[in-house]
Image (cartoon, rainbow, N blue to C red; front, side, top):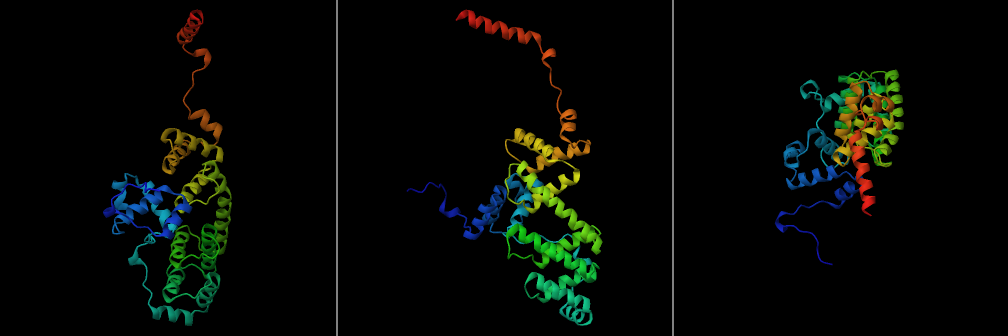
Length: 304
């Protein structure tokens, strides 16, 4: 069979079979396109530098970038906290803490058991940052590690484990939310579990089937849950998005829901009553137009 591809041999892009399979399994066209664009630049440019070439807005680019990070196809993003505020723990600091603080030593051992691996000194230094710099109690850090491990296993399958950098990033997010006690952690995890129960319904409402959302997609879904939108209202926003763009776009759909939320409209009947354009009733329709149509039909019949 002849080759149907049209390309220049001098301008080819090579992609590994493993990367290709991950992209095919994920089914995210934007992520695949961004990955090809990055390959074409030999990874020398950050994704943000390709926004103009791809003609994407910020949200679309961030969604594709986050999908590639979730797939492990580009390096993790820098953490949002300022580096100059975060202590740089040396090997001696780690060794001293392990030898003098029994609680921290016990936490390290429990984390190793939960992740099923021996932690390196840099790994332990990350734990020390959560424990010493952020001041998170050992029991809260252990709940954090379990939460991250369960989330990664659910998204990528059993046997996959979070990195300590991923755990650190989530730890900083917990700290910003004030999750610094067992009670606060338990409440957060309970709410998170309830949210996860709604997400499959949202995904089916958006015609995305039973696949798990990417991290960036999940942020949208959680936001809509927090705003208080039932699935039927999300379905209406989906219909409006596809009607306007002829395809589904997360940021456009989010814009519709945000406008409704800011207007205090959440239930479907509220939205349909107050957000839809007034329709002309048959009684108030243009009578001349109706009469003209009747005359046209009658003339056609007489002509036959």
